[in-house]
Image 1 (spheres, rainbow, N blue to C red):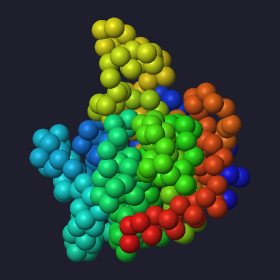
Image 2: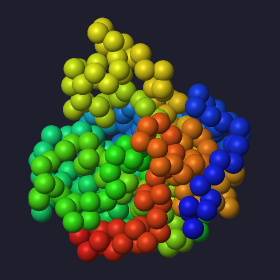
Image 3: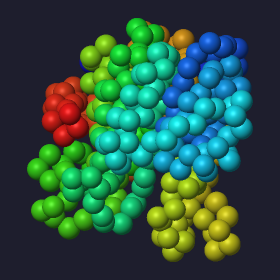
Image 4: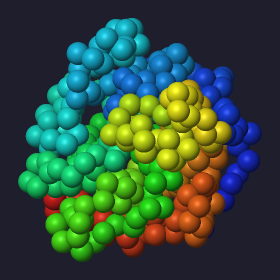
Length: 309
């Protein structure tokens, strides 16, 4: 059970570590990594670090032309994928499977945050549909390409502490929409997904990359950023808890490659270490018990299968 292992292990890395630093001495030559969202912000830093260590990186992108502009051909292979569209998810997965290649590392880094109320697909709430169901269906379809050494990393957030799974109203059809509750629910789903996937035999982790001001926050207004203390009146980042993209990418790269985690799995990680359980409302560190509950993880898996298969 992941709860019993949710304790720091003293990795030797921390808040300020970068992706390149945690990959020092690790040779990924001959390895293939898929990084969703791997062409901007945190994902771009992840792609570059993995490629620098020798991995062949596949970047499925909703905007492939933009991805190709951001990534030189030697750095990554770009394909098309819209995580909010189940048909697009299955089409990408089937194209990849047809190539006959294996997946050594899968990093589910793409996501949306604080999106105004809307609906995608069959009326789904977009955070849950994109951040969770899109990645769920993608991994589920790609399972034949996994080996017993494959690692799957889901990028969650301390935002999971805002909301447990809203089992009776996943898509905000019965209560007023709240963009932060919607985001928080999807980030809890990312953690539960890692818990259950690991229980099913695929080594998996969920990570909080830290606070990074990237394109992910495009739906957060300047006024809200100021009110939250993220920036000053000139738009400069002033919150000392914010990281650079290279620092933010460190935990997911560490999760995907570190030999320190070879006997662990189904855990929530932060600052390149295993996080502690917390019941604090501060949202600064730790993982809530409901996000690593094995029964909830199995329940969400069953529900996700019903919605996507």
